[in-house]
Image (cartoon, rainbow, N blue to C red; front, side, top):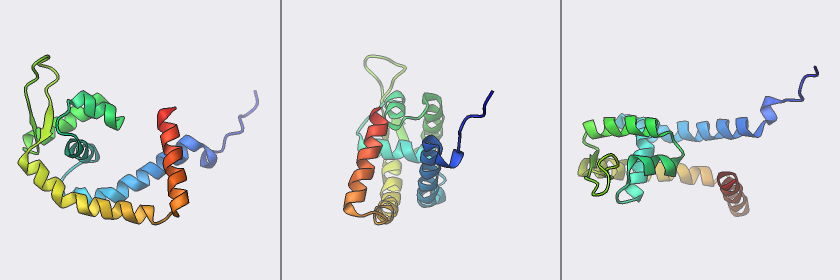
Length: 142
């Protein structure tokens, strides 16, 4: 049996994972002082962008596992960062939204997160950034 020609350093899934983790670690510095996990930050960012969503919809939008999102939601509910509404159709899929406390926290974190994003974008020319965005869209849509 011959050994496959496999070079981890050139393996695209590995490189994408390393890049995503590097960006996440960089952005984490903005929300870590607020005692938010990566998942909690993502839930907060999604709920700040969308008026109301179920935990399943948040999981679908972020590509995260529903169980992971549900754990983050439970902790955020305990801290009063989000609130759960009542679903008229299904009691299991109640809509979530940021509470006043959650919106205030997001308003403090978002400017620094946007500054971090701008620093990342400045690493690329306009054309490179357009290509990167196009490439990422292709991967997500595949």
